[in-house]
Length: 158
Image (cartoon, rainbow, N blue to C red; front, side, top):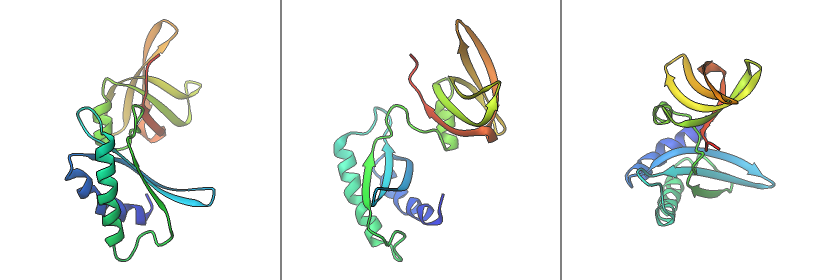
């Protein structure tokens, strides 16, 4: 995470958690000629509602405007939204919540001829994760080294 995003996260996490919510992820991206600071927030149980997002947007905006020096001196658009059902899995707490849940895992390098797996996360430790995948009609447990995980998110099983 870039240094300025770490400072932003440090400043806004208390604002978000004071409202019983969690900062799931943040990103700073350029789309066409516009910069966006996107915050993904959630609330358990039941998820976050639009009124809470609107309230948090105002409070986070005020907090960001008060930071000196300004970590993002160029103009940008602040967007707050729910991470959705297929929210990313990044932090250790996310991985713990993902146990026994259906997830999508993308890898840096092929494992058993594949770079993408979907299945149930059965176990995780500092080195590996165990994913129960389905191949046609049978289930198989595979071990994936955590250092090979490029991205992971909750998924919907079809």
